Structure formats: structure tokens, C-alpha cells
Length: 323
Image (tube, rainbow, N blue to C red):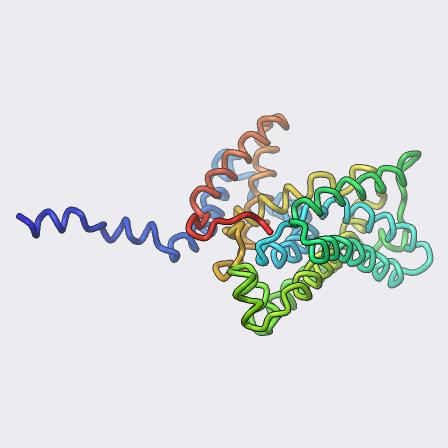
């Protein structure tokens, strides 16, 4: 009788597997497949037609580059809400400089993004302010700058930079960014340090990690990648308005969480979170548009899916306030 009762109390192998880190790691891939299959059925196969796939890919490039930088920030256990405003300001700089030199324009965009990232990192590290407080403030600051500079009219880019709009170039830039970031994340001390800080900043500091320096440079790097993404954005759109990069920060956050990135950061992050999450968001967003849902309904559906993934993937044992 006692053996029977003890066996009933023991969790089943299926329940143990569903609660395991292995299954949670597979959830984003399963979610991506499910969303593709569901959207393909609902759109009667239209979403997987070659023309639609090319359109989907054209919407993936610069968000994936931005998400790569934010991935490192969130691995720290921090957060960055300035991607949209940074992209807008950097896009303006690139558009203006494109009339003088394309390489100068690219460099200007990257440096603009890096400068905004440095400002975020400085206030976060120097004054010990939580990252979400700092970046919300600078988000409004640079969104205002973007709106002020585009008040009278949209800012056009040169014909030379618009002529660079090709999938081959955008794919090359995106792949290079992902490969370099993957190398640094997996095979250098930088990746180990950001994961260590995310897992426990105090412990990382006592183990010899220069936490303030790593956090500052991570914000600079994230800003620089957003500046590079602005170049991809400019060659696509051709001119910059006050709405450039609008709601990008929300898209990136949702994409990374859908991709399985723990919002608390740490050692359980996976580089695949970037690719899977960005693709999942893009397929979901395009599918909802193709189905004719209004904007409010789209936001509602995406919000519900976002909440479900947070509930399924969050590590409650490691839950803490975002740094």
C-alpha cells in the first residue's frame, strides 16, 4: 500500500520532461513551427508563397540586427527601451551624410547609435539607476529630437544610398553581425561576463568581472548595432519621418521573449533566441495583417501570445527586479 501511494506521488516522466529546461528550450522552436503552420492554414498557403517569403525577409533584417544588441543587454538582466528613437536619430544622420559619402554615412550612423548607448550606460553605471528608468527617459529625449528634426518635412537620403537596396547586401550585413556576435557570445570572455552578471552581479564582481565596464560597453555595443541597423533601414525606406523606428523597442522585446530569452538574463539565454524570436514575430505580424485584422485586434492577439510565452518560459526561482 505504501509503495503504491509513493508511486502515485512521484511525478510522471512526461510531467518531469514538460517541467525540464530541455523542453523549455524547445518551446520557441515549437512555437515558430506552430505559428507558421497555423498562419499557412489560415491564409490558405499564401504566407509561404515565394513573393510573400521575400517580403517577410525584407522585414527581418534590421530588427534582427537591433535584437542582437538588445540580446546582450538583456543577458545582463537589464533592458533597453531606446532602440526605436536611436534608430530614428541615426537614420537622420545617415540620410544627411549620404549626400557626402556613403562610408561616412554608415560610420556616422554607427557612432550616433554608440553615443546614445554610451549615454544610457553612463547614467546606468555611474548613478546606479535601473536600466529601464534611464532608457525610458532617453527614449523620450531622442524621440523628441527625431520629431524636432523632421517637423517641417521628411529628411531624404541620397540616390546613391537608395541604390544600395538589395536583399543580397542586407542578408550579408545581417549574417555578418550574427556570426560576429555568436563568436563573441560563445567563445570569448565577453559572453561569459555578460552571462555571469545576469546570473548574479555581486558574485560576478567577486569573481573578477569588471561589471561596470562590461555593462557600459554592452550598452555602447547595442547602440552601435542599432546605428548599423539604421543604415539598412535608410536604404529600404529612402526618407526619414518622425515615425522612424516607432514601437521598435516593443517589437524587439516581444521578439526576444517569444524566442525564449529569459527576461532575467543569466546563463540560460540562448543565441538562437534572436533568430527564432524575430522570425516568429515577423510571421505572426504578417499573418495577422493578411487575415485582415484591425490594428487593435492585432495588438490584442500579440499581447495574449506574449503573456503565454512569458508564463511558460520565465524562471520564477531566478526572478528579480530588472537592473
